[in-house]
Image (cartoon, rainbow, N blue to C red; front, side):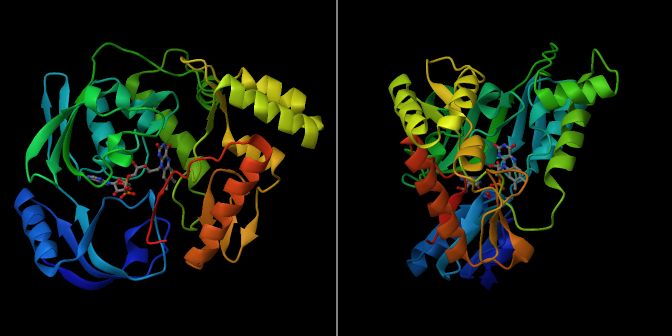
Length: 349
Ligand SMILES: Cc1cc2nc3c(=O)[nH]c(=O)nc-3n(C[C@H](O)[C@H](O)[C@H](O)COP(=O)(O)OP(=O)(O)OC[C@H]3O[C@@H](n4cnc5c(N)ncnc54)[C@H](O)[C@@H]3O)c2cc1C
């Protein structure tokens, strides 16, 4: 194991901001991990876990601690249970499942990052989410030093959330995930972009591989247009109780009456199972707040996807990114009465 010193944080994430980390280590075995944690303890410094760095925004301040990148490898099929080490490239795991005719993760193709992270924010796309296929998460408990299995039922998965990014944030280091997949076809091809893809290609009964190909192709068009720094969606959608929705409606009636009809249509567009009302934050940022394309320094709300903030030419100052995030949060609050949650982990702000 090689502990590097004075490493640029900007090079460790897809967003590309950050100062200098005092120490950085790449973990390839469980023994490496114990050694690295021991090193940090002996030096009495903090440590922070990263993987692919696609959902983290570092501040430009230096990090006087140790960045630990989990790069554990291993992929094994036991019947229809897929055991994947936390450091496996996520998209390789999806391809492996598809190659073995196992359904359940194909719509999560092309999500950047490593496998352990999919449990952290319960990744989701095109109607599938990690929670539907995770059976068990094997973790290292930083408080007790034990390695243990956390059953899916104890992970409290919900929309972009789990114990790993909420109640137990920083408590566990994920080592492995066991996924429960199925050989029974269960195509989920009802998203508008997916329907359009297959109708253009005149495919009516797509195979598992064809569904994966569709998602890869759709995402390639959507995400690869720029070389600017990105970290996916910066804001979670609004999940409103009926009372909260009525409050939002009142505000819109008073401040943006021309949008009331559109809001009432959107209200019924995304059915939920618990009576909540899902309002896309992208719509609020774009149509209600008029912030699409808004730029502060070299930080910009994407012209094409209002949920994304871009680090233009990798020149953005993290302070400008934070100002832009705060502007969106306060503006969305002004028009809806609800602050949107920020999706990437902000470190050192
Ligand atoms: C272009 C783009 C598109 C994206 N599209 C989607 C999408 O469609 N759906 C979606 O849900 N997300 C999406 N994302 C967000 C991101 O890809 C996912 O959240 C992904 O799972 C992050 O993986 P990572 O390995 O890069 O994690 P990192 O960014 O390295 O880490 C994310 C968080 O997980 C923690 N973490 C990582 N590994 C471990 C571990 N082994 N143990 C404990 N904690 C750990 C980190 O501390 C951090 O809090 C997108 C991002 C980008 C840049």
